[in-house]
Length: 266
Image: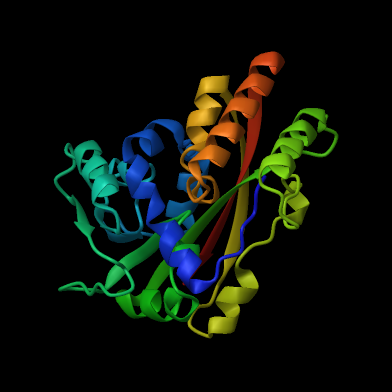
């Protein structure tokens, strides 16, 4: 994996890159397990027909599942292309709406949401606003739910393939932070960060593992939706795609394990 530090300017650039590959993002990114969504609904105690605010819904990967459960959903999405795909996917749900705006600047006509949810998106929000703004937009007793998915390597799994993937990154984009994906035990949660804000209580963390199988073409398409890769010069991107495609073809496909960490606070 290639890891790039995120100073403010880099963060601003990278969080806008996804819009250039909106359709590819929708096709390539995995969906979330139903069990994880069940836990989110249980822990947030969203009432039937409750009002949800989703930060950065992207193409609606989680939005459709939540709207399908009967909730009133308002998503605030930075990218016009991503929002267009999300609106198309949510067309069957009249209680779901996507607005195009920068969440950091956006203000609703009516707040008092039952829950604010963020799937793979809260880290793009400026640290000083992540909890102050979300808490302000919630009704008293409302809940914040943050889902952080990350690739992991399970203990005992043969890491030979992923070592070869890492060698490709090290050769094409050498960086001291490049390393193999972590094990599940090495992945942290947001408990301490949320507690430090002083704005939430009753913090609960649950974790879900799931596997996704990829062909060479599918995995290269997935790589093309990651901001560190999108931010590379075209020559380096193409070299990574070419080498990893050849490796997966040789390996006859791959299985990627995801860990979804659900953080819920009231």
